[in-house]
Amino acid sequence: MSRPLNVIGLMSGTSLDGVDAAVIRTDGVTVFERGPSLSLPYDPDLRQCARTLLDHAAYLAPDSPEVLEFERLLTERHVQAVQALRLQTGPVDLIGFHGQTIYHAPALHRTWQIGDATLLSRKTQLPVVHDFRSADVAAGGEGAPLAPWYHAALLQNAPRPVAILNIGGVANVTFLGRSGEIIACDTGPGNALMDDWALRHTGVACDTDGALARNGHVDQAILDMLLADPYFSRPAPKSLDRQSFIAALDAVSRCSPADGAATLAAFTIAAVARTEFPEEPDVWYVCGGGRHNPVLMEGLQKALNAPVLLGDSLGWNGDALEAECFGFLAVRVLRQLPLSAPGITGAPDFLPGGRLTCAGLSTLPRWVSLPDEDP
Image (cartoon, rainbow, N blue to C red):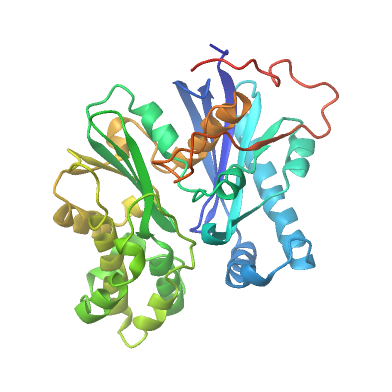
């Protein structure tokens, strides 16, 4: 067994709210320790730049000036997160750098996470593992979600069946079955549509405490129309781009601000409830920013046939879990352990992925070339 490494995992998710950073000690199979974490929000200009790129990413060239400038600013924010977190922890061996997804189209064999790993490595003087998704997509997989590997490691001795739901900009779920199987998919929209709607009508980039949605009524005809999308009849594995259901904002445009918020929240909840597994989970654990929305949590409790609990009830930090995940996955990359799996990403086999960058390091750490070992 390889020695555990101290890793800083970095995640900037589809909610476009900022950079999450977390320390984890792991060998890519077992989680030995979860350390401090922090979040650095995007400033309004950077968030708006990210949103503009999302709207046009399908037509942008990677070397276009606006892409390169955003990538530089985004990476500098990640550097700040790493340096701030290093003040709270001991020596760090490695960074797991997800980058910012601005386009995800696995059917076109394309997924695009912006971030300059060379700049991050040079500025921090640490090795950086990055580009976690593209090998899976190239092999025919969905490229997402990847968090199930981490969920399974955290719950390797827990009773099953169990479901772990992460509600970020897009919502995704991991199912851990009684016989050891892992099944995963994006369920549908998470916070993204609600955030966009709230910003449009309140000037605030989220529906704080679900207050807007709580004062509204669900338009059932619109909800039924949204749920008729073919995506919801596809079995897992499957994945989404943040903009996949952007037309839902037009669909609720005739609603009042409160009714539109309520309908979009109901859309997120119903999409989760429609996800099918081989057996009903005994319990659902919810992580990500959406768990702070009481309208979502109450709606999930009514819609699902099992208790719905916060991941925090397990001692997890639900805000840092995805950042921890990419620290965990970074070590899997070094050890050539799978990131792809038929039940998780839909890839044809259990395949490795990711890339390592060591820019500006005068000597490579002795553990960079790890021997192949069974986990």
